[in-house]
Image (tube, rainbow, N blue to C red; front, side, top):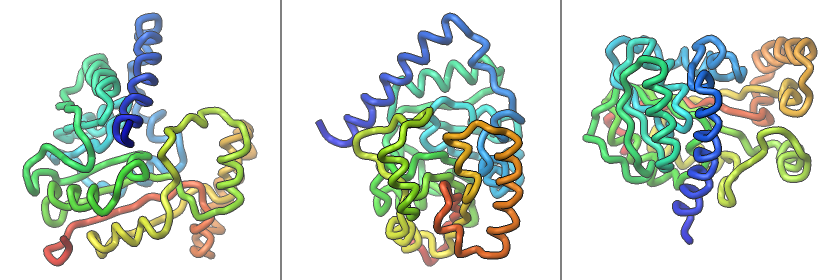
Length: 255
């Protein structure tokens, strides 16, 4: 079984389990925009980097459960979502219907996008690039974005050795991952920079990464405030954060 088939089957199984729960609790398909934007500390600032989405063609890249697509559509975007998992595509379609928004969904591989050249104004992705071969997927992303378009991706970051140890050895909620995936590394960002020379990267959750294993809202809110202060003063510490947000724009010189 190859890498793509393993990935597809893993997420199809997850989607199948979730589909059964929606029969019992159909309200779980509904999306509260504010809850989605606030469910992780990097989501809202990452969305802001997309800019004005009114009438913009937006690619929901690796759409997964389809919650981001609903929020994007409510912001005025013309949304197309794709995912390798047919189960996730079905869930995303059902979620769009339940929330009364129009979104086009297709099953596709991020390394072979079935879209015309320079078709999209924006692209959004959350925890998807680290599943892919970035020299291939990056060129496909460059191909489908119009010049001056913006792509924003949120990715788990793998440059903190202590965090990597915790990911490998400590139990915590939501730890499930595929056999092949690993957090994004610096060498992969450099691969993307060869395609998108103006790539920007920002780290999120330095001290506040403990919220992953310690559900203490007051403590975590304090740590998030500390993060904003510390990271603004010592940007080099972003290398040791839990997540990063990548912002990319195609230029005439990149390819």
